[in-house]
Image (cartoon, rainbow, N blue to C red):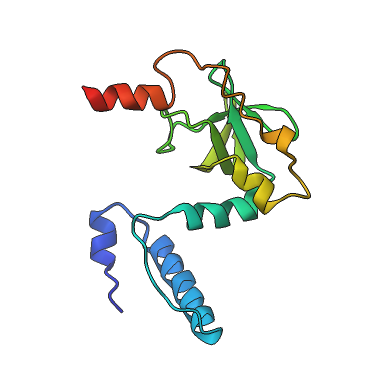
Length: 155
């Protein structure tokens, strides 16, 4: 049903992973139909998806430090973005990750950028305001994070 093994091969996507994603999507569609929720798409609004991932992995949160390393929030541990990640090099201030992998360093894999205020909204039993204080007054080194993105956009 609108599924091409050839397309997966041409786009370097594992067929088995694509089948699993399709099956999960069908399950969600069936559940939405059963509870009468309208199926609609918002291609520009990924906050809902990011919030739902954050709700599932709120205890796997890390914050960017001045040293450009990340520090897990509740049980402080230095971690890094895995080099294979699409976010590697972009250095978002707050991330949620799925797993840690130890090779030469402790790396976060399967990460997304989040807004820290989501943590208090989603898990008030786990996070308090003091846990997510962003220290916005403390600046990161030049050309890191959002300032690097803005500078790159100007050129």
